[in-house]
Image 1: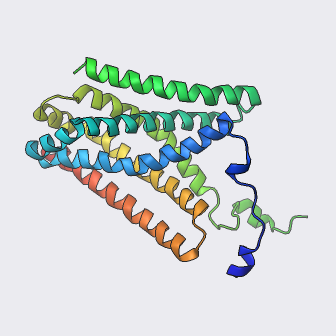
Image 2: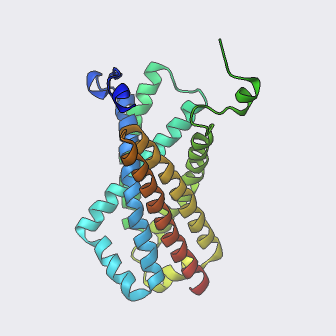
Image 3: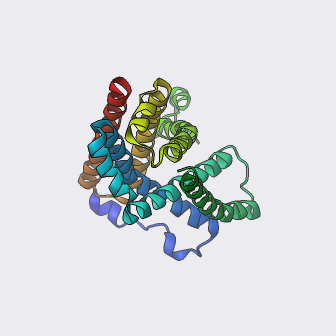
Length: 130
Length: 126
């Protein structure tokens, strides 16, 4: 069976198409999804630390609070918000709206801008209410 | 010409024998994840930098603990379904695909169990 399927012609893949905003967002949606998959380890670690008591929690908090920890959390925040906005866009398209060429392109571009703005906003608020 | 029997059509099952379950669960958990993770972000903002007893007390609250538990379940199911699609899209050697799909299940359930245990432990014990 393997030989039969190996010789079948393949449909063109990413590299033969011009990169357009909706396509870039589709790829980013998968990449952020994959990143969030492993980012869940951070959520689990944080919850376990909170369940383990003050000493271990302070230790984990110290790692999350270091510059490298904050950089990873900043990336996690952006991935989460970007993936969430992408998901909302998918819901809209599932219902049949926003599929027109110009509008879908504009919404795809808006998604990047909105995800970055919202991420920065979340972090500013987090520092302000501290 | 459609060779499928009326019963087959009504059941809506394709070659995967799985119907639209995967698609639908992905959408349901996605919809649930939006408010649940917004709550999580808000919670982290509020308790960022607060002393441990204050955080533990907040997680001890039944409403907070319940929302955290729901977030874990919905989030874990969503990420498991998503990674399944990625594996099925890119891994075409049967034994590798099956192994990774199994690993995906184990990893997701392990993380889910750890998170849930933690949420319940704080919720019950404070």
